[in-house]
Length: 474
Image (tube, rainbow, N blue to C red; front, top):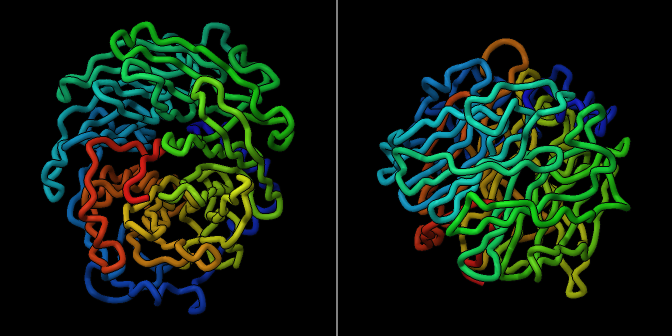
């Protein structure tokens, strides 16, 4: 989602009339309640999601909210929106349209802010590797520095791409370098290089953008940035493969929203503007398309992808309405703005199975749609946690590909009167807790206590980027 509505408007154009069916006034119905998830409010009284008061908390009995770190200056502006998360050791890095925050999460019940770095550049998607933090910038700036001003998209000198920070001192991140990329960088994903001294960054962005010199037509690929770990200031674009010539979104709008890589399987799943892709990344600098899937009836904007641990399934999510629309009402559109579970056949084709959408109807003033999530590391099971904007945080099981089901949740009531952008942007499990980056409320820390997810507590990792998957039990 881009502030100022460019990507949102394009997304809504792609979904056409499907958006309106999920945006009207609605009332929760008993048939779509979350009884199977054992809902309870923090006050102990069961409530329907659509009936919650402003900021009222509702959660299943197996989820406990343990902490919240609110947004504070300099991230206290009207559009100081929290975005994606990355983790390393005892730290969580939270992107924000105005920069990023470093949190000390060594005590998850008492997280502390270590640094807030003011460096505007929507949407400031983050990835971490060693001493480096990669930050995406997807709006044109007057320059690549943190002090640069926002410019018109038609400006001849507008800069957008990725910024690189040294985070060896978590309290004092140091800006190192920037790399301009075609159409900017909406999201980024780190891909290991051939040795420890090299990493690649796959940069995804939508386009073309009429009138923008940096985003000409056709825009049918990604940018690949090579980062020398010992000399990150020498980072540069080494390839711009045209992977999607035959398949672009509505009206010629192309490129990808997000890519998830699974280096051990030499696979990547690309969620693009119009279609989903399975890629071979045996040579990470030269990815190749294996197969393509299209679902015009049910999917509008292919937003994100998650492999299961064995690399035999991919969950693709649809961001119907670009995150700006109330698509989780009681309209009955259970496949639109949802997830689709695809199994990867031995011949590496993608076969669609079940859909999953949160079973808790939200109010007509709550933006809600499938958004960022990742696996909970339960060996032998396919369970993930996912953000749904104002639909909150959902934990769901897709071990049975045809019958995925929610097993836990956490959410808040609407922000205030009128449709406002808010809720959980990203929700990930990391070393025993769920961390949710709430757009306007800051960082939420949740604990899940459930026999189905308890085995995950034995799994710890030193670094976690949701879009760079590593095997934990396969």
